Image (cartoon, rainbow, N blue to C red; front, side, top):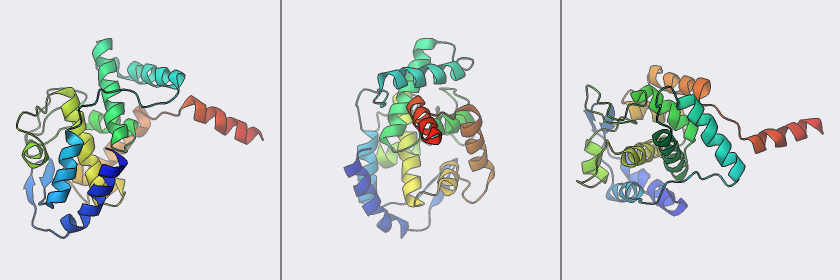
Length: 214
């Protein structure tokens, strides 16, 4: 999500938060939102840019992809597809202002990296997106089992919830799962993020080591 788009979305949230009476729709909860919020979210999920690793240093790009690919290999043996998934996760998470490793932890909890996972409530794909989001912010042709589409929706929705909750990740994750206020889901996502997907860029590690030496 571009800075301009994110600014427009945040500006519209004040009106949306004043609307109450949302109805439950399974894993995620439908809440009436201002037209300006819907428009901003629609613009976010309509991005058709080619996914890429948004890491400036070429060596760091290769290191991140190699490390994450190694961790994901048992779940997704096909290297080409695995790297495509990881590149798309990094791209969609970064453009939405999210930590890619957080998104990997969320996917692990939500679907176990199963592309065609469907919950009992009807949530679909890697990030378990509810179909009502297509009607709310997408287009009728959008397929939530499509890799890029699912990740784009999921990251956009989580960013939206983070903005609604003013950066409170615990509450944003609760909204994403439809369990706002309960600790089980946010704790599972954080545990998966920290135990399986935590990552420190090499350039940052070198800088910190030099700082400590001085």
